[in-house]
Image: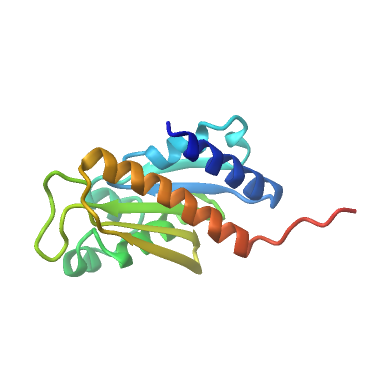
Length: 169
């Protein structure tokens, strides 16, 4: 576990827990690394409900409700699928927020149109989702580590602009 991810997870925990909200994940290529980073911080069970590792299209469709036609037309490694994974995780896990990741970590799996190293990240609520496309191929391990850290950074920035600070009484 990278030290930076623990710091990010601690900040996420403070914001989500203090707002009385809940979080879940939907991960494909990252295989649970984002969830692992979140639960590395003691007290995560106060706000983190769980995650779905949707490594195949079948799981994306059947558990997360990702549209079959979108998977066929745009590929699982697309912004649309990353968004649908957030929405699906929110519904399946009954959470306020979700983080998703879908991509080609390597060394194989990529196409000319979507090369290895392409990873789509998304986070937010069912109605307000932000996305990020990671596209450099630095090898499987580095691609996955970078995607995990970027997903946490992106969600933290999202929270900072979307959660109202609690007022002292």
